[in-house]
Length: 289
Image (cartoon, rainbow, N blue to C red; front, top):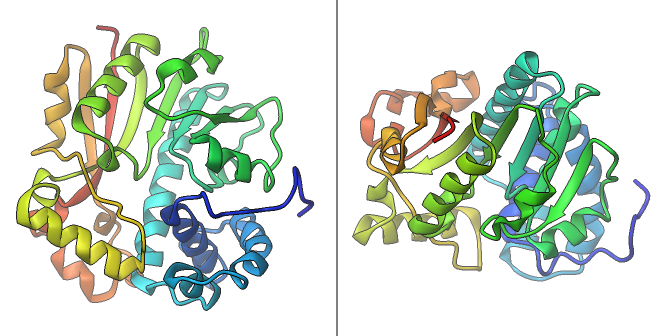
């Protein structure tokens, strides 16, 4: 891939963004991939030389391809499901608008592009500045360098007369609860009758001792040096319906619902509520209030 706008420097990019990118690329390179992502493979090949010059547990993990195989499976299944949500939306609305909030280095547009969709990747300026060096924008694929909490980004979405799908994969749990609520209500007001697909965490794994245990486990498992603590959780997916009239819950998905052979013996936990509701994806419609 040709370099776009200068020298790559990932010192300001969240570790989770690099980890999920590498995880999907590694799974894509397998002979029997859950998710095929050629663009992720290409970007990883670009980043590898940079990581060889960096110290730290995360850099060593990625350049040595030492990512937990079970994490690769989890993230690939989750990404494939979000792709499925996007494709189902585009089947109904071929010229619809998709907003990928907190996109990181995700390459969903290149996996699901129909030739008609208008697709926005949204993330913090430091992330988008690096992503612009790796992928090219065009009239239907645009990168927005804004915090999801700075609602001014909504003014840049060209959605007049079009259906809108908002994807929030792996982001809401890192935000304060009131900020998530404000964001969802702002989306409902700005894009009435839009669909929202988001990942949620059970409140049990956010607060108190269980929350601290979950954070320590995540840092050890992912070899993350930064403090990435969950801030927002719910008791049930229907909880968002109480935030205001017009928020309609449709369905909940847990990655073990796929019953994929690569899940191995982890599949025995599929029926346990405490596991099923630890972290899950939900689809809503945000009807006009």
